[in-house]
Length: 374
Ligand code: COA
Image (cartoon, rainbow, N blue to C red; front, top):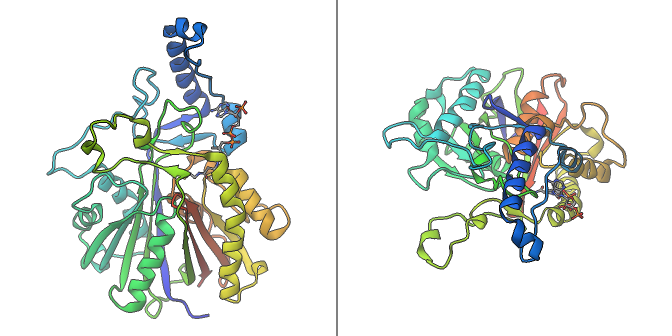
């Protein structure tokens, strides 16, 4: 099968600070005690429902997450504040998200043995963008010194796989020759750290890929992109209403809906049957048997979801290393998750080996990429 484009380098970056489930729940439960104590009379009178504590055991069992990296630990663990403290910068300083993106971009360029000036397309694709314009990608283009053009896009947890298809199409059509895709997923500012149902889910991470035309490449560690498939279907089960119109309605004073919120159980039920069919349909279109796939780099939202998807497709548990999970250490890093898994766990595969990179999440959106080691 002919490669459409080739991945010649990948990289990922996480900030140093980590928060374990124990640390997270200690802070959360201190907040719960504080609220319940100061509202004791109302709770006793039955006019207010007491807040319930969060437990590390529940988090690990329900999601597989044990800890997460965050850009600013201080503030999150302060029961009086419970949100990261990230000082805003002047317009003539590099933005927080561009600086974050830069870390993984440089790693991918080094892995690809590629000069920034040889890149003619930069796509920053992430669930959350720090501002509307000018584009974070355009700022990154300047910071790196790349040529051509750059733009931002956002497709929830599928931001990375959607960007792979868009960059591949640009390369196939000839509008770009070498593309840099970066997914700076700074998730911690969009978390409602006071919400027991979702305070444990996300972590911060950035990933990057360098893609180029298939004709040019003969690098031994490259990965052929043999096919991409995207899917979307509207759903409000994963949502964040933060946006530029928020200030226009004086009645709209709610803050919680300007952060991430979801119907976790419903998402679980919708996604689990959908993804195995989506992957299998893509492989059938490409005439590749599922049994030929040696590695599954799946989206990292919930370890039970991934196990479920794998078992539905293959009728058995994954063999060691067949479906690498990074969720325990990183949390849900949105579109960066499957790429961290790819970046960490691809080097051992032999020439010709096939793997799939698959994301799914808000939208709903899903993206599948069939890769083959050169
Ligand atoms: N600590 C202790 N108990 C908790 C808790 C916490 N932090 N959060 C919820 N619980 C309790 C609930 O109160 C409930 O108990 P109850 O029945 O006595 O009221 C029980 O645990 C089960 O809650 P539920 O919300 O049904 O948990 P779950 O098993 O569905 O797990 C998620 C929650 C979020 C981990 C899971 O639904 C999920 O990952 N869904 C998919 C999310 C996803 O992929 N979204 C895309 C994001 S980009």
